[in-house]
Image (cartoon, rainbow over all chains, first blue to last red; front, side, top):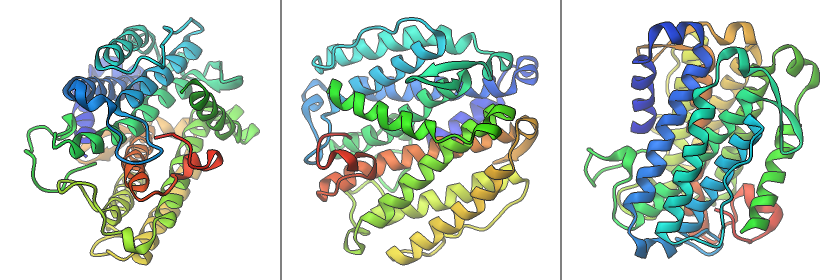
Length: 177
Length: 180
């Protein structure tokens, strides 16, 4: 929950003029920035030895989960912008490779989110072969990363680590994830 | 992994394709958000129903919520976000609830409430400002927050289910194959 609270604080701190003229995309950009920060930190915090960890049969390893985030986020940014997303090798799940994949995808996505305006939001783009709004495509990237971050947080807790969105509250007591 | 991703994406595409055409054409943004909401609402409810009562007290590690507390948490925050979007405050339907039946009832109550709020949303009302946790935010922003929080909570529940050898709802068509 702290993560979402921080998002709200960030939302409140937005550039007022821009937010007034582009309220929807301003919030989308802030949500993207927040989840990008959490996912990037979660990927960096887990040691290499934890990248092969999976908490239960049928789960992804931590490394596979990070790469999956990169793949889906990149694919959606590519569809929203009509440009080619970075190619992610899903067989490369070491910490160094997964972190690099994530960075490549966020570097690709950053200007796509940054360029969004409310006027663009309702423009239609192809998302997995279907006509969807550009806003929907980019929002999908955020909420998919939200889902996967929720999963990563449990892996981190299982390794006795505090997820980034809970940092500052110590390692005791109930938390958001 | 590529095959898994393809299947995952196909499942999402089908979910996205469940659009109501006319509403989507005249209110593309709010129609989009409603579809996202419905997907996360259904995933949460299916997960809550799928985990047996005996596992509602399970937590994979000491510093996290029990599964039942996760369901209650989702119910509470759905009500907070949706009532803010509507411009009112509603009590936590999960307060003091711990049994499977009770927290599922709370989740359903919050979803029923949210359903009406999302149904009333149009692109014209989406940009109206509402108070959310004391701050000004667009109505759409509050409802997108809810979708994101629902999805994060669902993502948290997934390892709980895997640790109990339960296939998460979003992985059901692929049986016990890898997903999350």
